[in-house]
Length: 74
Image (cartoon, rainbow, N blue to C red; front, top):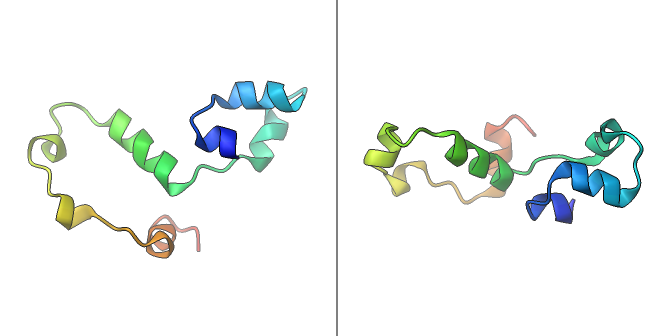
């Protein structure tokens, strides 16, 4: 998980662990909230309203438990 969370490609993690099938690695791999945030940022278009007029105070949630609840993980 630390390698995956450190942005190592999951295919490489799978090979490093010696898994014959990527599906085996996927059983143990879970994206945390930080990985999800990064993925959303990468997916956002450069002309997105949130990029033009960011409102950091409005959308900042630092509490991990609250984030998990919002994502339906609890």
